[in-house]
Image (tube, rainbow, N blue to C red):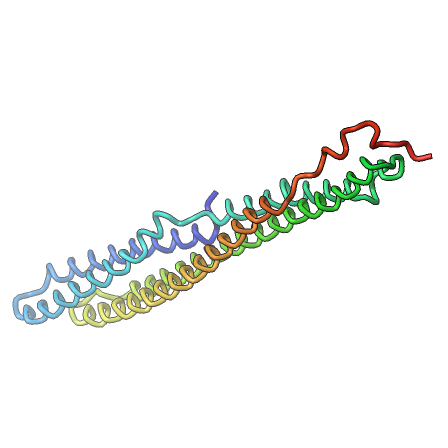
Length: 245
């Protein structure tokens, strides 16, 4: 499913391409009817159109790769939610169920095995709660990335819209064409500036997310080292367990 922000940007870029094509076709039609005594006006127009082609090429050069690989904010939000619902909440519930105050075992048994069991439970609860915390951190990181991508594409839609406004220019006369070219080139420059700013903002966000993900990965690694195995050897002998009287 395509994000509304991405769809809006794609629609705006499609509209922009149509407007640019219409403008070039309109100029070509006008120039094809220029009489000989106005031939001196054609060269400046041709130069202006070449400059416009370069500016349009620059615009699409910055935007096309991003259009081809837009990302998926919806998928990021879905995965973020799954980490909480399918991992964080599940292990959190387990941690709550096995805590010492919730288990009848601690009341029904005594002895060396029972004491070893009581010593082991808090460490397991702590480990499970750490997993829940990591799941919440991962959700936050993925949601931030998804929101950032949506914000980026909203900015891209604005950039395309600015260019579209400039491309809707009157070019029905030889005299009017240079002014129309100037308006479109100016709009293209503004749009390219907006795209550049959006790209830099997205890059800054992805750098932040990358750092967050590295930190989370290290916490997962550390948790694996720190989450000690229970001393089940002290719980195996029947003689270590006595029913509470």
